[in-house]
Image (cartoon, rainbow, N blue to C red; front, side):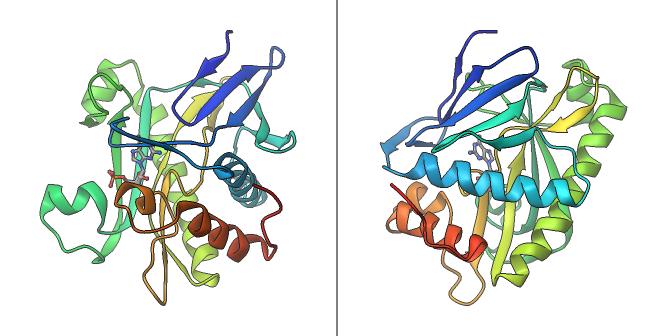
Amino acid sequence: MDVYEGKAKKVIPLDEEKVILEFKDDATAFNGEKKAQFRGKGWLNAQISAHLFKILEEKGVKTHFIGIAGDNKLIAERLRMYPLEVVVRNVVAGSLKKRLLLAEGTELPEPIVELYYKDDFLGDPMINQYHAKILGIGEDELREMERTALKVNEILREYFREKGIILVDFKLEFGKNARGEIVLGDEISPDTCRFWDAETMESLDKDVFRFDKGDLISAYERLYERLTGEAPARR
Ligand code: 5GP
C-alpha cells in the first residue's frame, strides 16, 4: 500500500495491519472549490477524533482507532474502505435544507440516514441501497453500517447533549479489516460533523469556514475544551 493523500489527511502504511493517519491543517469545502490552511487544525481534529473514538469503543462500537502517535497523528487499523459516506441527521441543516425545503434548525422526529457515493469527480452523489448493490456493497453489509451509524448517533447525541452541544448531523465512513469485520474508519471531528452550542446556536464546526462565520480555530478550540475539560495544548 502506498501513502494515500486526501484533502484533509494522509494515510501512511505502518505495517500489514496498521496505518498512521496524519491530519493536515488544510481545509476544503464545496468539493474542493474553497481552500485554506489553519495552523493547529490537524492537531485539534486528531485529538477530537481520538477522544470520540475512545468513547465509542467504550460503548462497544468497533472502530479503527488504536492510539495517538503524537501531535497530529493517530495509529489505526488498516481497512479496505467502502466508497460510501453514511450521513446521520438529527436537525435540519446543510443539504437537507435545500433537498426538502425545510427550515434550518427544525428537529427531525427521528434520525435520517443517507448514503453518498464517495467520488470527487461525480461530486459525492446521494445514492440508495440499489445503487450500493451495483457498487458491490451487499445488503447485509449496508444494513450493518446503517445500524452502527444509528448507534453512534445515539451515543454521541447524548454525550454532546450533556456538554450543552447539539449534534446536528455527521458523516461516517466504514471499511473491512483483515478478519472481514466491518469497522468504523476515517475521522469524527468538526470537519465531518455539525455541532451547535445549545444556548447560542453558534456553529463549532467546519460551517465556520464554509460560510465565513468567524475564526475556525477558536471554534474548534472551544469544542475541544468543552469535550476534554482541558485547554488545547498547541497550535
Ligand atoms: P451535508 O449533506 O448537509 O452537506 O452534510 C451533512 C453532514 O455530513 C455534515 O456534518 C458534513 O460536515 C458531513 N459531510 C458530508 N459530506 C462530507 C464530505 O465530503 N466531507 C466532510 N468532511 N464532511 C461531509
